[in-house]
Length: 134
Image (cartoon, rainbow, N blue to C red):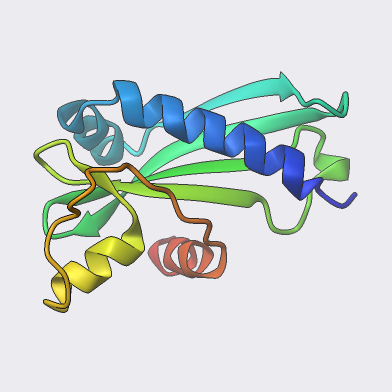
């Protein structure tokens, strides 16, 4: 069954936003070290059941990638590609997008002047990274 991307995106953004507000770097580091995953089943605005999976991956340079994955709850309805939302937390607690970090690593840009916390939707890069790690 095709995933309703608009509803799944809203769910993922809500969970990622909540995580960015309350998560602490040291807690995420323990979660990543232990390969812990949090999950929850929710009912979307369309009345369908969705499964939210939250986990942390190392991003390099002392940063952690926070990942929220949303898919249909029932396996027989699961989409081949779950919808993902990601953000990266630095050891000082600053949350940014993976794209912002790539620019910083290349020396193209300095720290964000706005201090805004952003998210980025990615599918292939994370899936490939998970495939290589597993």
